[in-house]
Length: 487
Image (cartoon, rainbow, N blue to C red; front, side, top):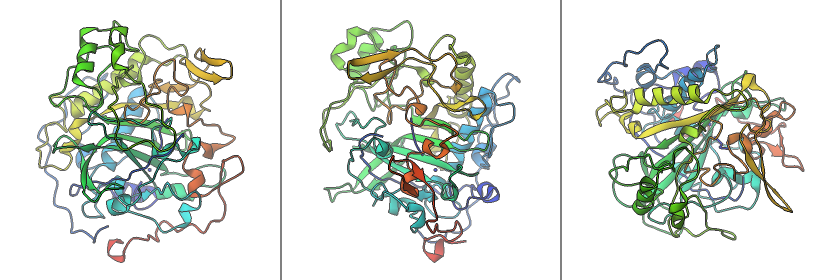
Protein backbone atom coordinates (compact mmCIF):
# COMPACT_ATOMS: atom_id res chain seq x y z
CA UNK A 1 0.00 0.00 0.00
CA UNK A 2 2.80 2.19 -0.70
CA UNK A 3 3.98 4.14 -3.65
CA UNK A 4 7.17 5.29 -5.23
CA UNK A 5 10.88 5.97 -8.48
CA UNK A 6 15.12 5.94 -10.99
CA UNK A 7 17.84 8.34 -12.05
CA UNK A 8 19.25 9.88 -15.19
CA UNK A 9 18.06 7.71 -18.08
CA UNK A 10 15.60 4.93 -18.64
CA UNK A 11 17.86 2.52 -20.51
CA UNK A 12 19.23 -0.55 -18.80
CA UNK A 13 22.81 0.46 -19.65
CA UNK A 14 22.40 3.83 -17.98
CA UNK A 15 20.63 2.23 -15.07
CA UNK A 16 23.74 0.18 -14.45
CA UNK A 17 26.20 3.00 -15.06
CA UNK A 18 24.82 5.70 -12.85
CA UNK A 19 25.26 4.12 -9.49
CA UNK A 20 28.93 4.90 -8.75
CA UNK A 21 29.58 6.07 -5.14
CA UNK A 22 29.91 9.79 -4.27
CA UNK A 23 29.39 12.38 -1.53
CA UNK A 24 26.72 12.48 1.14
CA UNK A 25 23.38 14.16 0.42
CA UNK A 26 19.79 14.57 1.48
CA UNK A 27 16.34 15.76 0.32
CA UNK A 28 12.73 16.50 1.38
CA UNK A 29 9.23 17.62 0.43
CA UNK A 30 6.22 18.06 2.62
CA UNK A 31 3.03 16.62 1.22
CA UNK A 32 -0.16 16.06 3.16
CA UNK A 33 -3.05 14.67 1.14
CA UNK A 34 -6.14 12.83 2.22
CA UNK A 35 -6.77 9.26 1.02
CA UNK A 36 -5.04 7.53 -1.14
CA UNK A 37 20.78 21.26 -8.23
CA UNK A 38 23.86 21.82 -8.22
CA UNK A 39 26.85 22.10 -10.61
CA UNK A 40 28.50 19.18 -12.29
CA UNK A 41 30.66 17.43 -9.67
CA UNK A 42 34.27 16.48 -9.87
CA UNK A 43 35.10 12.84 -10.41
CA UNK A 44 34.30 10.93 -7.20
CA UNK A 45 37.19 9.73 -5.10
CA UNK A 46 37.82 6.03 -4.95
CA UNK A 47 35.54 4.44 -2.39
CA UNK A 48 37.33 2.83 0.56
CA UNK A 49 37.27 -0.91 0.82
CA UNK A 50 34.78 -2.37 3.25
CA UNK A 51 36.18 -2.97 6.69
CA UNK A 52 35.16 -6.62 6.71
CA UNK A 53 34.55 -9.27 4.13
CA UNK A 54 31.04 -10.68 3.69
CA UNK A 55 30.32 -13.37 6.27
CA UNK A 56 31.00 -16.88 5.12
CA UNK A 57 27.72 -18.74 5.04
CA UNK A 58 26.31 -22.06 4.03
CA UNK A 59 24.52 -22.34 0.72
CA UNK A 60 21.19 -22.28 2.58
CA UNK A 61 21.84 -18.74 3.82
CA UNK A 62 20.41 -15.88 1.78
CA UNK A 63 23.69 -14.19 0.91
CA UNK A 64 24.42 -10.46 0.73
CA UNK A 65 27.37 -9.01 -1.19
CA UNK A 66 29.73 -6.13 -0.39
CA UNK A 67 29.51 -5.16 -4.07
CA UNK A 68 25.97 -3.96 -3.45
CA UNK A 69 27.56 -1.21 -1.33
CA UNK A 70 30.84 -0.49 -3.09
CA UNK A 71 29.72 -1.00 -6.70
CA UNK A 72 25.90 -0.95 -6.87
CA UNK A 73 24.47 -2.49 -10.01
CA UNK A 74 20.82 -3.37 -9.37
CA UNK A 75 19.24 -6.06 -11.56
CA UNK A 76 16.35 -5.33 -13.89
CA UNK A 77 14.66 -8.59 -12.94
CA UNK A 78 14.47 -10.98 -10.02
CA UNK A 79 16.65 -14.08 -10.37
CA UNK A 80 14.96 -16.81 -12.41
CA UNK A 81 14.40 -19.16 -9.47
CA UNK A 82 12.31 -16.46 -7.74
CA UNK A 83 12.86 -17.70 -4.22
CA UNK A 84 12.09 -15.45 -1.26
CA UNK A 85 15.81 -14.82 -1.05
CA UNK A 86 15.90 -13.69 -4.70
CA UNK A 87 13.20 -11.06 -4.11
CA UNK A 88 14.90 -9.69 -1.00
CA UNK A 89 18.33 -9.60 -2.61
CA UNK A 90 16.67 -7.65 -5.45
CA UNK A 91 15.09 -5.24 -2.94
CA UNK A 92 18.30 -4.61 -0.98
CA UNK A 93 20.29 -4.06 -4.19
CA UNK A 94 17.84 -1.44 -5.38
CA UNK A 95 17.70 0.31 -2.04
CA UNK A 96 21.50 0.49 -1.71
CA UNK A 97 21.87 1.66 -5.31
CA UNK A 98 19.32 4.44 -4.88
CA UNK A 99 20.74 5.71 -1.57
CA UNK A 100 24.30 5.76 -2.91
CA UNK A 101 25.96 9.13 -3.61
CA UNK A 102 25.06 10.34 -7.08
CA UNK A 103 27.87 10.30 -9.65
CA UNK A 104 26.15 13.02 -11.69
CA UNK A 105 24.83 15.56 -9.17
CA UNK A 106 27.13 16.75 -6.40
CA UNK A 107 25.72 16.41 -2.92
CA UNK A 108 22.74 14.27 -3.91
CA UNK A 109 21.91 10.63 -3.49
CA UNK A 110 20.85 8.71 -6.57
CA UNK A 111 17.17 8.60 -5.63
CA UNK A 112 17.19 12.39 -5.34
CA UNK A 113 18.21 12.70 -8.99
CA UNK A 114 15.04 11.06 -10.29
CA UNK A 115 12.05 13.10 -11.38
CA UNK A 116 10.29 14.65 -8.41
CA UNK A 117 6.53 14.33 -8.18
CA UNK A 118 4.58 17.56 -7.70
CA UNK A 119 1.43 16.84 -5.66
CA UNK A 120 -0.14 20.12 -6.75
CA UNK A 121 -0.16 19.25 -10.48
CA UNK A 122 -3.00 16.87 -11.32
CA UNK A 123 -2.02 15.90 -14.88
CA UNK A 124 0.66 16.09 -17.55
CA UNK A 125 3.72 16.13 -15.27
CA UNK A 126 5.71 14.00 -17.71
CA UNK A 127 5.31 16.82 -20.25
CA UNK A 128 6.72 19.42 -17.87
CA UNK A 129 10.38 20.22 -17.27
CA UNK A 130 11.68 17.81 -14.68
CA UNK A 131 12.53 18.85 -11.15
CA UNK A 132 15.68 17.36 -9.65
CA UNK A 133 17.43 17.31 -6.31
CA UNK A 134 16.71 18.55 -2.83
CA UNK A 135 16.39 22.21 -3.80
CA UNK A 136 13.38 21.31 -5.91
CA UNK A 137 12.06 18.87 -3.34
CA UNK A 138 12.09 21.51 -0.61
CA UNK A 139 9.71 23.60 -2.72
CA UNK A 140 7.21 20.77 -3.17
CA UNK A 141 5.32 21.48 0.02
CA UNK A 142 1.70 20.47 -0.35
CA UNK A 143 -1.26 20.67 1.95
CA UNK A 144 -3.77 17.95 2.51
CA UNK A 145 -6.24 17.08 -0.27
CA UNK A 146 -9.44 15.10 0.07
CA UNK A 147 -9.49 12.33 -2.52
CA UNK A 148 -8.51 8.69 -2.01
CA UNK A 149 -6.30 8.69 -5.09
CA UNK A 150 -4.13 11.31 -3.41
CA UNK A 151 -2.65 8.75 -1.01
CA UNK A 152 0.81 9.52 -2.27
CA UNK A 153 1.61 12.59 -0.22
CA UNK A 154 0.40 11.48 3.17
CA UNK A 155 -0.35 8.42 5.25
CA UNK A 156 -1.85 5.66 3.10
CA UNK A 157 -5.28 6.07 4.68
CA UNK A 158 -5.15 9.86 5.08
CA UNK A 159 -4.54 9.80 8.81
CA UNK A 160 -1.87 12.00 10.33
CA UNK A 161 1.02 10.51 12.32
CA UNK A 162 2.70 12.54 15.07
CA UNK A 163 6.10 11.64 16.49
CA UNK A 164 7.00 11.75 20.18
CA UNK A 165 7.71 15.48 19.93
CA UNK A 166 4.20 16.05 18.60
CA UNK A 167 5.28 16.95 15.07
CA UNK A 168 3.51 15.66 12.00
CA UNK A 169 5.51 13.62 9.48
CA UNK A 170 6.39 14.82 5.96
CA UNK A 171 6.38 12.82 2.71
CA UNK A 172 7.65 13.09 -0.86
CA UNK A 173 7.86 10.96 -4.02
CA UNK A 174 10.34 10.42 -6.84
CA UNK A 175 9.75 8.44 -10.02
CA UNK A 176 12.02 7.15 -12.76
CA UNK A 177 12.17 8.75 -16.18
CA UNK A 178 11.22 5.36 -17.59
CA UNK A 179 7.77 5.78 -16.07
CA UNK A 180 7.13 8.62 -18.51
CA UNK A 181 7.62 6.14 -21.37
CA UNK A 182 4.50 4.18 -20.39
CA UNK A 183 1.84 3.28 -22.93
CA UNK A 184 -1.77 2.35 -22.33
CA UNK A 185 -0.69 -1.30 -22.29
CA UNK A 186 1.62 -0.83 -19.33
CA UNK A 187 4.90 0.50 -17.99
CA UNK A 188 8.38 -0.14 -19.38
CA UNK A 189 11.68 -1.51 -18.15
CA UNK A 190 13.33 0.70 -15.53
CA UNK A 191 10.06 2.03 -14.11
CA UNK A 192 9.95 2.52 -10.36
CA UNK A 193 8.56 4.86 -7.73
CA UNK A 194 10.06 5.87 -4.38
CA UNK A 195 8.22 7.36 -1.43
CA UNK A 196 10.12 8.76 1.55
CA UNK A 197 8.86 9.85 4.97
CA UNK A 198 10.60 12.34 7.27
CA UNK A 199 10.26 13.64 10.81
CA UNK A 200 11.62 16.77 12.48
CA UNK A 201 14.67 16.10 14.65
CA UNK A 202 14.64 18.48 17.65
CA UNK A 203 18.38 17.92 18.22
CA UNK A 204 21.27 16.44 16.24
CA UNK A 205 21.08 12.68 15.83
CA UNK A 206 23.83 11.02 13.79
CA UNK A 207 21.73 7.90 13.25
CA UNK A 208 19.43 9.62 10.72
CA UNK A 209 19.88 10.54 7.09
CA UNK A 210 19.00 14.22 7.30
CA UNK A 211 18.48 17.47 5.50
CA UNK A 212 17.61 21.06 6.29
CA UNK A 213 14.23 22.41 5.24
CA UNK A 214 12.12 25.47 5.96
CA UNK A 215 8.53 24.37 6.50
CA UNK A 216 5.38 26.32 5.63
CA UNK A 217 4.55 29.07 8.08
CA UNK A 218 8.10 29.30 9.38
CA UNK A 219 11.31 31.12 8.47
CA UNK A 220 13.53 28.92 10.64
CA UNK A 221 15.10 25.86 9.02
CA UNK A 222 14.61 22.53 10.74
CA UNK A 223 16.48 19.25 10.43
CA UNK A 224 14.46 16.42 8.96
CA UNK A 225 15.43 12.78 9.48
CA UNK A 226 14.40 9.98 7.15
CA UNK A 227 12.19 7.42 8.88
CA UNK A 228 10.79 5.40 5.96
CA UNK A 229 11.64 4.47 2.37
CA UNK A 230 9.31 2.63 -0.02
CA UNK A 231 10.47 1.44 -3.44
CA UNK A 232 8.21 -0.24 -6.00
CA UNK A 233 9.91 -1.75 -9.05
CA UNK A 234 8.21 -2.71 -12.30
CA UNK A 235 9.72 -5.68 -14.16
CA UNK A 236 8.51 -7.43 -17.31
CA UNK A 237 7.62 -10.53 -15.30
CA UNK A 238 6.19 -8.57 -12.39
CA UNK A 239 4.00 -5.74 -13.74
CA UNK A 240 2.18 -5.77 -10.39
CA UNK A 241 5.43 -4.21 -9.14
CA UNK A 242 7.62 -5.52 -6.35
CA UNK A 243 6.82 -3.44 -3.29
CA UNK A 244 9.65 -3.24 -0.73
CA UNK A 245 9.86 -1.06 2.34
CA UNK A 246 12.67 0.05 4.66
CA UNK A 247 12.57 1.86 8.00
CA UNK A 248 14.79 3.44 10.61
CA UNK A 249 15.45 0.89 13.35
CA UNK A 250 14.13 3.19 16.08
CA UNK A 251 10.68 3.81 14.63
CA UNK A 252 8.45 1.60 16.76
CA UNK A 253 8.58 -1.51 18.96
CA UNK A 254 6.83 -4.80 18.28
CA UNK A 255 3.43 -5.02 19.94
CA UNK A 256 4.34 -8.36 21.54
CA UNK A 257 6.76 -6.62 23.93
CA UNK A 258 9.91 -8.33 22.67
CA UNK A 259 11.74 -5.24 21.35
CA UNK A 260 14.65 -3.87 23.42
CA UNK A 261 14.42 -0.10 23.80
CA UNK A 262 16.90 1.94 21.71
CA UNK A 263 19.24 4.28 23.59
CA UNK A 264 17.45 7.43 22.41
CA UNK A 265 13.96 5.96 22.68
CA UNK A 266 11.38 5.18 20.04
CA UNK A 267 10.31 7.78 17.48
CA UNK A 268 6.66 6.74 17.59
CA UNK A 269 6.13 5.35 21.09
CA UNK A 270 6.63 6.92 24.51
CA UNK A 271 8.93 5.23 27.01
CA UNK A 272 5.97 4.48 29.30
CA UNK A 273 4.00 2.93 26.45
CA UNK A 274 6.93 0.82 25.33
CA UNK A 275 7.62 -0.31 28.89
CA UNK A 276 4.00 -1.41 29.19
CA UNK A 277 4.46 -3.66 26.17
CA UNK A 278 7.60 -5.16 27.72
CA UNK A 279 5.86 -5.70 31.05
CA UNK A 280 2.88 -7.34 29.35
CA UNK A 281 4.31 -9.54 26.61
CA UNK A 282 2.12 -11.39 24.17
CA UNK A 283 2.85 -15.02 23.26
CA UNK A 284 2.40 -14.31 19.58
CA UNK A 285 2.34 -11.40 17.16
CA UNK A 286 -0.71 -9.23 16.72
CA UNK A 287 -2.31 -6.38 18.68
CA UNK A 288 -0.78 -5.30 22.00
CA UNK A 289 -1.91 -6.67 25.34
CA UNK A 290 -5.15 -5.07 26.54
CA UNK A 291 -3.28 -4.17 29.75
CA UNK A 292 -1.74 -1.35 27.67
CA UNK A 293 -5.08 -0.04 26.40
CA UNK A 294 -4.56 3.35 28.10
CA UNK A 295 -1.82 4.13 25.57
CA UNK A 296 -4.20 3.86 22.57
CA UNK A 297 -1.67 2.09 20.40
CA UNK A 298 -2.10 2.46 16.63
CA UNK A 299 -5.09 4.79 16.99
CA UNK A 300 -5.15 8.00 14.92
CA UNK A 301 -6.80 11.23 15.97
CA UNK A 302 -9.64 12.16 13.61
CA UNK A 303 -9.37 15.45 11.73
CA UNK A 304 -11.65 17.35 9.44
CA UNK A 305 -9.68 19.05 6.70
CA UNK A 306 -6.03 19.92 7.18
CA UNK A 307 -4.48 18.37 10.29
CA UNK A 308 -2.42 20.67 12.54
CA UNK A 309 1.36 20.65 12.24
CA UNK A 310 1.60 19.69 15.91
CA UNK A 311 -0.60 17.51 18.07
CA UNK A 312 -0.46 15.01 20.88
CA UNK A 313 2.05 12.25 20.04
CA UNK A 314 0.77 8.90 18.82
CA UNK A 315 1.85 5.60 20.34
CA UNK A 316 2.64 3.07 17.63
CA UNK A 317 3.68 -0.57 17.75
CA UNK A 318 4.24 -3.08 14.96
CA UNK A 319 1.87 -6.02 15.02
CA UNK A 320 3.78 -8.32 12.69
CA UNK A 321 7.57 -8.51 12.54
CA UNK A 322 8.62 -7.92 8.93
CA UNK A 323 4.97 -7.94 7.88
CA UNK A 324 4.91 -11.65 8.50
CA UNK A 325 2.17 -13.48 10.42
CA UNK A 326 3.30 -16.60 12.28
CA UNK A 327 2.29 -20.04 11.17
CA UNK A 328 1.35 -21.37 7.76
CA UNK A 329 -0.44 -19.11 5.33
CA UNK A 330 -3.67 -20.42 3.87
CA UNK A 331 -2.51 -19.62 0.32
CA UNK A 332 0.74 -21.58 0.44
CA UNK A 333 3.04 -18.63 1.14
CA UNK A 334 5.95 -20.01 3.16
CA UNK A 335 5.96 -17.48 6.00
CA UNK A 336 8.94 -19.05 7.75
CA UNK A 337 11.12 -18.96 4.62
CA UNK A 338 10.00 -15.39 3.93
CA UNK A 339 10.95 -14.22 7.42
CA UNK A 340 14.26 -16.09 7.40
CA UNK A 341 15.44 -14.49 4.13
CA UNK A 342 14.66 -10.98 5.43
CA UNK A 343 16.40 -11.56 8.75
CA UNK A 344 19.47 -13.16 7.21
CA UNK A 345 20.06 -10.24 4.84
CA UNK A 346 19.38 -7.67 7.55
CA UNK A 347 21.89 -9.41 9.82
CA UNK A 348 24.61 -9.52 7.15
CA UNK A 349 24.12 -5.88 6.16
CA UNK A 350 23.00 -3.96 9.25
CA UNK A 351 23.42 -6.43 12.11
CA UNK A 352 26.12 -6.00 14.81
CA UNK A 353 28.77 -7.42 12.45
CA UNK A 354 27.06 -6.26 9.26
CA UNK A 355 28.83 -4.88 6.20
CA UNK A 356 27.26 -1.44 6.57
CA UNK A 357 27.75 -1.51 10.34
CA UNK A 358 31.48 -2.11 9.86
CA UNK A 359 31.98 0.96 7.67
CA UNK A 360 33.67 3.99 9.26
CA UNK A 361 31.29 6.84 9.99
CA UNK A 362 33.12 8.93 7.39
CA UNK A 363 31.87 6.61 4.64
CA UNK A 364 28.75 8.09 3.02
CA UNK A 365 27.08 4.67 3.06
CA UNK A 366 27.61 4.12 6.80
CA UNK A 367 24.41 6.00 7.69
CA UNK A 368 22.31 3.14 6.31
CA UNK A 369 23.38 0.82 9.14
CA UNK A 370 20.59 2.47 11.12
CA UNK A 371 17.94 1.29 8.67
CA UNK A 372 16.53 -2.15 7.88
CA UNK A 373 14.43 -3.99 5.36
CA UNK A 374 10.96 -4.64 6.72
CA UNK A 375 9.75 -6.80 3.85
CA UNK A 376 8.34 -6.88 0.34
CA UNK A 377 5.28 -8.17 -1.46
CA UNK A 378 4.57 -9.38 -5.01
CA UNK A 379 2.40 -11.96 -6.77
CA UNK A 380 3.26 -15.39 -8.10
CA UNK A 381 4.35 -15.05 -11.73
CA UNK A 382 3.05 -11.47 -11.88
CA UNK A 383 -0.58 -12.48 -11.50
CA UNK A 384 -3.41 -10.09 -10.67
CA UNK A 385 -3.23 -9.14 -7.00
CA UNK A 386 -6.80 -10.23 -6.22
CA UNK A 387 -7.97 -10.56 -2.63
CA UNK A 388 -5.47 -10.87 0.23
CA UNK A 389 -4.79 -14.22 1.89
CA UNK A 390 -5.10 -12.56 5.33
CA UNK A 391 -8.25 -11.30 7.02
CA UNK A 392 -9.26 -7.69 6.46
CA UNK A 393 -12.17 -5.36 7.16
CA UNK A 394 -14.69 -3.93 4.70
CA UNK A 395 -16.84 -0.95 5.56
CA UNK A 396 -20.53 -1.36 4.81
CA UNK A 397 -23.62 0.70 5.62
CA UNK A 398 -24.59 -1.91 8.18
CA UNK A 399 -21.20 -1.71 9.85
CA UNK A 400 -17.68 -3.02 9.56
CA UNK A 401 -17.26 -6.62 8.49
CA UNK A 402 -14.15 -8.77 8.82
CA UNK A 403 -13.57 -10.84 5.70
CA UNK A 404 -11.48 -14.01 5.96
CA UNK A 405 -8.40 -14.39 3.81
CA UNK A 406 -8.62 -15.86 0.32
CA UNK A 407 -6.91 -19.25 0.13
CA UNK A 408 -6.57 -18.91 -3.66
CA UNK A 409 -4.67 -15.61 -3.39
CA UNK A 410 -1.45 -15.43 -5.42
CA UNK A 411 0.07 -12.71 -3.24
CA UNK A 412 3.52 -13.64 -1.94
CA UNK A 413 6.11 -12.31 0.51
CA UNK A 414 5.26 -10.25 3.61
CA UNK A 415 1.50 -10.56 3.46
CA UNK A 416 0.90 -8.03 6.29
CA UNK A 417 3.44 -5.52 4.96
CA UNK A 418 3.14 -2.06 6.49
CA UNK A 419 5.63 0.74 7.11
CA UNK A 420 5.17 2.31 10.55
CA UNK A 421 5.66 5.78 9.07
CA UNK A 422 3.35 5.35 6.08
CA UNK A 423 0.65 2.73 6.73
CA UNK A 424 0.76 3.11 10.49
CA UNK A 425 -2.90 2.59 11.16
CA UNK A 426 -3.56 -0.23 8.71
CA UNK A 427 -2.50 -3.31 10.63
CA UNK A 428 -4.23 -6.59 11.38
CA UNK A 429 -7.76 -7.83 10.83
CA UNK A 430 -9.32 -4.39 11.33
CA UNK A 431 -7.40 -3.00 8.34
CA UNK A 432 -9.19 -2.49 5.06
CA UNK A 433 -5.81 -2.53 3.28
CA UNK A 434 -3.64 -5.16 5.01
CA UNK A 435 -0.73 -4.72 2.59
CA UNK A 436 0.35 -2.68 -0.45
CA UNK A 437 -2.11 -4.38 -2.78
CA UNK A 438 -4.98 -3.17 -0.60
CA UNK A 439 -4.46 0.24 -2.21
CA UNK A 440 -2.39 -0.67 -5.26
CA UNK A 441 -4.52 -3.46 -6.68
CA UNK A 442 -3.15 -4.83 -9.93
CA UNK A 443 -5.07 -6.23 -12.87
CA UNK A 444 -3.71 -7.07 -16.32
CA UNK A 445 -6.84 -5.48 -17.79
CA UNK A 446 -5.83 -2.11 -16.28
CA UNK A 447 -2.07 -2.36 -15.76
CA UNK A 448 -1.46 1.35 -15.09
CA UNK A 449 -3.84 1.56 -12.15
CA UNK A 450 -1.25 -0.02 -9.86
CA UNK A 451 0.39 3.42 -9.72
CA UNK A 452 -1.49 6.18 -7.93
CA UNK A 453 0.64 8.93 -9.44
CA UNK A 454 0.15 7.79 -13.06
CA UNK A 455 -2.91 10.06 -13.64
CA UNK A 456 -0.89 13.09 -12.53
CA UNK A 457 1.99 12.11 -14.83
CA UNK A 458 -0.31 11.75 -17.84
CA UNK A 459 -4.07 12.23 -17.58
CA UNK A 460 -7.14 10.59 -16.07
CA UNK A 461 -10.54 9.56 -17.42
CA UNK A 462 -13.84 10.29 -15.69
CA UNK A 463 -13.26 7.37 -13.33
CA UNK A 464 -9.82 8.58 -12.33
CA UNK A 465 -8.01 5.88 -14.30
CA UNK A 466 -4.67 6.75 -15.87
CA UNK A 467 -4.82 7.63 -19.56
CA UNK A 468 -1.58 7.80 -21.52
CA UNK A 469 -1.82 10.03 -24.56
CA UNK A 470 0.41 12.17 -26.73
CA UNK A 471 1.39 14.68 -24.07
CA UNK A 472 4.66 15.84 -25.63
CA UNK A 473 6.73 14.06 -23.04
CA UNK A 474 10.17 15.52 -22.52
CA UNK A 475 12.61 12.89 -23.83
CA UNK A 476 14.69 11.19 -21.18
CA UNK A 477 17.84 12.79 -22.60
CA UNK A 478 16.39 16.30 -22.59
CA UNK A 479 16.71 17.11 -18.92
CA UNK A 480 15.40 20.43 -17.66
CA UNK A 481 18.29 20.67 -15.23
CA UNK A 482 20.86 23.43 -15.70
CA UNK A 483 23.31 22.79 -18.50
CA UNK A 484 26.16 22.24 -16.05
CA UNK A 485 24.39 19.21 -14.69
CA UNK A 486 24.04 17.43 -18.01
CA UNK A 487 26.41 14.77 -19.15
